[in-house]
Image 1 (cartoon, rainbow, N blue to C red):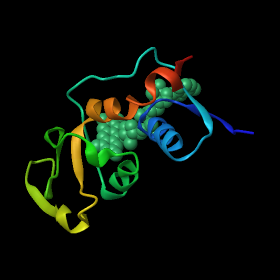
Image 2: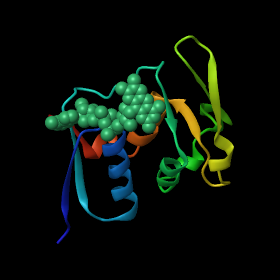
Image 3: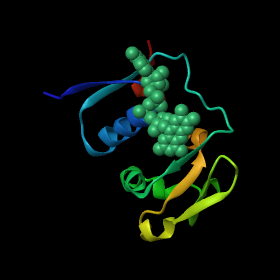
Length: 124
Ligand SMILES: Cc1cc2nc3c(=O)[nH]c(=O)nc-3n(C[C@H](O)[C@H](O)[C@H](O)COP(=O)(O)OP(=O)(O)OC[C@H]3O[C@@H](n4cnc5c(N)ncnc54)[C@H](O)[C@@H]3O)c2cc1C
């Protein structure tokens, strides 16, 4: 008998799990979201460390349009007086398969909902 799985919340975590289940298992699943629709507002970015990229690559994130993502090489840290304190070399965490990545949050949600939206997502 197939397992039935309910995922509560269509945030990044819920949608990622749904994609992993769809790609790698034959379990039945449904994502339940309390909001009427997913927020696809532009303007907010998200930064993804290499471990999250490794997980997303399992659901073909590596095929995403390169123009929609950016791989910063360093992060600068500033104090409240806007004086630089230090920087962090992000490149040393990168590998060929997984690079520190920034993109619009909406781009990530669009990517994650593409295969899930119609069949596996319900507003409650
Ligand atoms: C301003 C800001 C900037 C951030 N920037 C980054 C960043 O750059 N990089 C990063 O990794 N993280 C960042 N974060 C954290 C980031 O938001 C989380 O890592 C990510 O969104 C968490 O995803 P999630 O799916 O766990 O939760 P959420 O994105 O919060 O999704 C939870 C979903 O569950 C739904 N829900 C909740 N309760 C119920 C219920 N009872 N029934 C049904 N649905 C329900 C909610 O409506 C929501 O859609 C940031 C957070 C904030 C506030």
